[in-house]
Length: 147
Image (cartoon, rainbow, N blue to C red):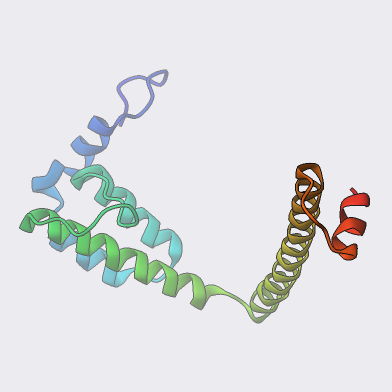
């Protein structure tokens, strides 16, 4: 596609290859999306859609008001929905089990970090109260002395 081996492939090269927006319509891409059976095929369709019809980030924008952009946005939403379904379908039981174990480990680590942060914040508050000369109950004085 590139004119010389030393020249990187550009978006214009891909547009020439795919015929531009007139060559590959959203209808063609919807048909390709329906026929996708793997995540890799789904990603290839997404690549062609972004090259020919432009990139749309569905996570950071609302559905556009213009009809042409609405169709592109809806296509991107469906593409991502199908990709998530394909990823889930391609997982083996071992991968599912490993993901569950990883979620438990992450939740435990997050809980420990939260507890440590709460304790540190309480200690900092106790030190601040001691420095201001505010009355402190015995447990808070011990906490401030441990800092």
